[in-house]
Image (cartoon, rainbow over all chains, first blue to last red; front, side, top):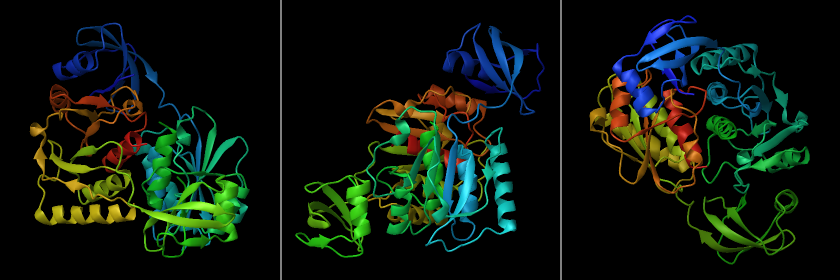
Length: 227
Length: 227
């Protein structure tokens, strides 16, 4: 469904006349014709389903309630990072569609606990990034856990990002199952931690030949799983 | 090809004995057997092709020269952004595999020129992000251009990120053609600018229902095109 942003507020049953540039976009570029439905994003942020009734003419039919939720629910188990980098993870990951963030304390984590201030700040970042990216549901941020408490959740596809893994494009398998994704700290997991996670049911996942920083890896993976 | 990071330096013909955790990873988790080839990342950053000769035993055969270049060459035409956000674009985009960045001045660009200092800084960011992500080739950063000078390059798949476009997963078409990608400034392109770009041969592209900030959109798109 194409979406046209218009400088107006809308109501059901309203007729709208498009200017030449918008009509060129709808008809010339996007090849939509009389009788087709499109979406209109109004100035107040509401989205309307509209019908093309004639050249340059739309009729607003009904309000569209938000965006569909991401087609797979993704939980990111992210090792705590130095400084404020976990905020970056929440910001980029929220934009990318992650549903739930779980901070994890690992052997190489320099930061080893989640202060109430930090947790509150991450919730604010998640809320603002949700608004920015027009997500209806704000992702949840869970209390911190120790790596030793992680288990692959039942019914989910559970992965550890591991740059040693072969590039097998697991995200391209068509599935609607939930995804549990574990991402290490700046220095990576220790061999013992990888071994522990594989023992607990997680599978190795590579995002390809390039190596991503911890702040980007979770978001990049979510973009692939939700495409 | 799986890759094992080992705390050693290597030479051709060297025999290596793996510890139990590494052998468990190779044989138990990744299911590689005697006779299979794997890669070894040595402490000095060099990568070796190695053969499994017996349980816990590897033989380093030859040096692997860097990672393969990204399978499609991506040029990002990125509208100039406020403050230092263009640096973020270069950093994330380099990790994601973009080959060439072209800064673009648009109607809504608040920053309207590229100072020599800024250009030098972006080149440093590109170099550091290349090393971080183990890319052999550092992406190039071109001088700034005006939007009015853009044309879809011949022989490339040319797109404008447009949140109004239908979600058609253009990146999933299997092709090795180059990609030219135009991403707007914080406030988006004006309707006239979109119309101009479509007239010059670019096609509208949506990355899905979520809306990405300008700092992330180019990198997220590159991750999809290079998967």
